[in-house]
Length: 171
Image (cartoon, rainbow, N blue to C red; front, side, top):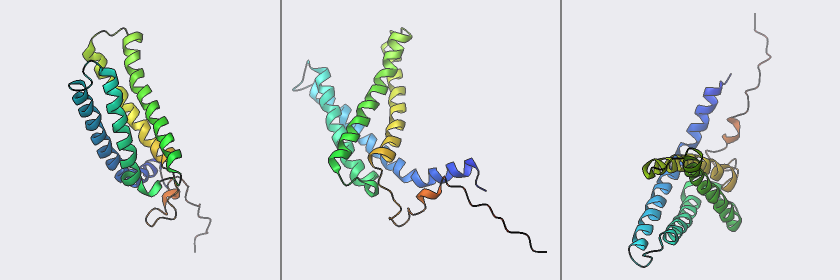
């Protein structure tokens, strides 16, 4: 009989490649976001820090969708890419809300005034939002069933209990 631990271990084994690829895509998207924002703030968008952040985040989001679609979740792509893109944007907006929410709670709920502490709270929010985004991408955005794909035909078996054996012992 499978224990909960064995089922969780099977789930992790099934998803570890997707998690690793998701991490790489997220890391590159982060560099694009921060790097492009930095360049824009110090060049053509000097004095427009918030708009530079919007541009940086937008470019990084489009990159992340394309990379996740073509690499991380390539076996799970939806037939309608525009519907998939809208779902992806909704999840990213939700993730931004989580990260901003952590900062908001720190600043207004706990009356934190130190910018470094607020920055740390924002980073905790980013971590939480990243976990939420991974599962939302996998189970809502890129959710095509993998039963037809070789090597993924056991995907549905992870949470199904094994049938009980009702055979009588031989004497």
